[in-house]
View 1 (cartoon, rainbow, N blue to C red):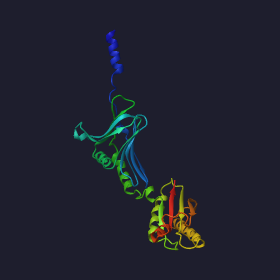
View 2: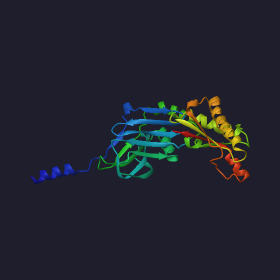
View 3: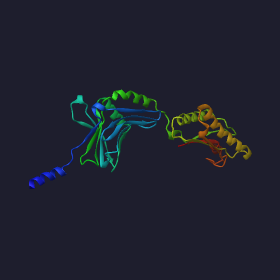
View 4: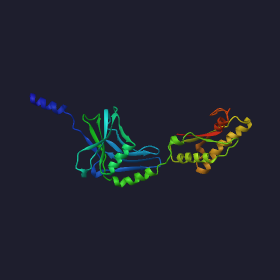
Length: 282
């Protein structure tokens, strides 16, 4: 009887065997999402979630493992690369290790290490993570599959090469400047507006383009008010006529000299105040 109790206790409280998650060889699918603002190459991993590679425009390449069913315990996650079948080896190369928080569901590498992982994947090796989840006592491993990778990789590469060069932060809150008593856009202002318009037409989250125009304190108010209006309208008309931006997206504000960016007591300060500020609103 004591022997039976002992055996039962050992079975009940024995550590769980380490679990490995990987897309099945017969049903591995890579999904490519292509746009000028982001590219992703992801595969579903049954029982875990999804994993793969992602890059947003202006950002660095990332290798990402996302899970909803197996959140981490507070411990660490190890990013590794398993040998290819032709190498006939069980050795695994560790790329790096990171601390994990309790409940963490996203594990990612960025930059050079992510590119290394992608390079290894193309060589037939298997990038993977090992971490402690809330569901298992022992560490689990989650491995990317190389099956059908070459069917989707060219589209992902093409997407990366076509990413828009500017990010939201790089074109948001743009300022263009004007000559004394002028409202025409010079070449530098047009180049800046071209960048902003090119981005705004791609980002569906942008709800409004706000133009705030200003003058310096030089001259009479009766002249500066229409001058401030003309500067705002010069920007607005350029976006509409040269880039087909809908007029309904554009809001114009004219502040004349009431909101200076610098002191009007110097030539340099007055030059900074003759401006239009363009802000993208999400």
